[in-house]
Image 1 (cartoon, rainbow, N blue to C red):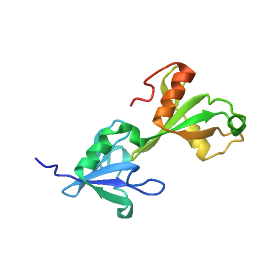
Image 2: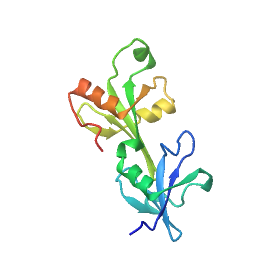
Image 3: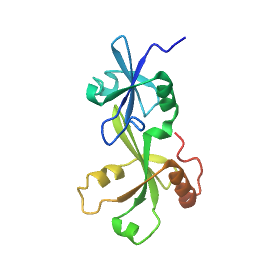
Length: 163
């Protein structure tokens, strides 16, 4: 049996079709999005999402590609090594932790790996990209493997990046 949905990715810069910011599907004019928070499909109007992205940023993808994107949870997450400030990074000091961001259609979700060895919501990523105070953190983007290695080294935990 074939999949009855049409699938689309949102690929507005800096995102691309290969690494999109969100996954959408449509059936008989009804749109749904893949939540990157609970990994479930949601109809429009759920969680305040009332319309699909503009047509110019949507790219059609085959059902097989959509299934691969849906299965690859890490592909939707960006990780950064966290430094208290740029001077620490320039001095070659080790980062103190790892932060991550999931840009889901219903909201952006930023987390920091805390001393309690768990991810908790935090504003570090936002503060880096929108510095308002006098001491924004310094972040260096890393891949999931480097994030896992850093958390093993800094906190002695494995599997911390699993979603």
